[in-house]
Image (cartoon, rainbow over all chains, first blue to last red; front, side):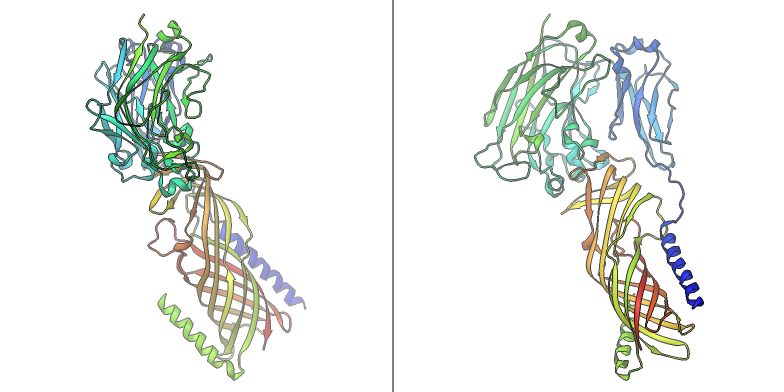
Length: 389
Length: 247
């Protein structure tokens, strides 16, 4: 009986060897293929006076779709012709110029090329230092005549800009289009929830339509996409994980806003549905328009931004203008609201310590994915009046 | 592939026709399949295998052998079995596609992948047997499997997707339902698989013996025009078995 026992040991050793073989395949350490700038900053006491406040010296959480990094400074002409810019890159990536290398930002944007660790991929960024370009005078009217189409990965949808006093385009407006474009890379501008319309109150206006988010949207618990437009930026990175964090509201302003008014048309969609796509009888969709004025830096010098979950409740909000109701109308009608809350502090204002956002949406409950597919809000000639000293 | 199918069917039919002669030796088998549906060699996009859980990968069947010469036999069998896999991996830049109806998000995923494969099948192995000794037999030959139950699905979580490629939009993926991404390519799987089987039977007792077989798929589990899963995945399974010989 000795022989079989020995064979038995060999036999089961073979079983173990086969199992080990399947899972122990050795492989090379994989090199990073990504090449992003994750953060950019200026450091050193000698540069602090160039900025309005400490939080302006850093640009953090740079979205993966960003290609223009803009720092706000008090005066471009005050910048030294040699200043080091520091960068945090994807692990293993390298940049030209390198992080910390002296650059001259007084002659306009400087281009940085980032190459991935594996050498296979590159991304180009521009870094600019600009003076704040905010509304001046007793009122400012947003006319939505500055229309562009962006084409990231061939996505094409309208984006809106204001033209600054220096003639540069300020892309202060954002929308959820970027998130929709993830699902529909082949769509044209007119297919997106937020788009320009040639039938504005004067010239072009903006049309916002609540849309069915399609099979994939429903599958991810996001059955509708409300048309929205707001001052701020859209961070596509959060669109699945935490959609309310993808809307980042506000841009700095140098004056205290007092009133908000403009023109609108509104047609609610026929069937109101809840977040689970169930029809809710006797409920009609509503549009929403509001403006928020808030402190953009906390006591520790950290930047404050408002997100979808706290745009009306953040403790750093100073005053808000809420449009009470927007009755359905097929003809252009006016809307207006007064900013209510506390007064601005003149010193904080002078230090660009306040930001403002304007928000328009075709479905008031769009953040919670409630609304009626087809609800359409058109807006144009939106005026904010400022306090006259 | 077609030639292998014809060979297997021909040999199988010949053996069944011989069954009446009483020269056939039957072996009833019960086994357990242990292995993986895996690319050949570890792809660079798989950083680590974090967990490998046992699955109900049982195999039951019978085969019959007819003598061909002094030490050679020709055998065929019929087996009902499952070749499953349940594994967690950490991926870096793993190509994947999230799809519902006509919409899809495609790109490179970095994070955790929990992969489930289940392949219930009827398998017909046809093989040559070499009798080393009365106790030992070596076996080799092709097999044909018809899948009756298919599952290839999983969850990508705790990471991010770069849409389109390494410089595309970076979308965070969470670790809860609704914020993670699930995929299911069950319907894309081939219904027929062919492969090669190598093995040994060891019969220390009069009737009862033990077997070890290794089956390697010759074709991927998906048709070659299915590009979503980047690497060709082959079913590679070892079967540890017990058999009862009826001579």
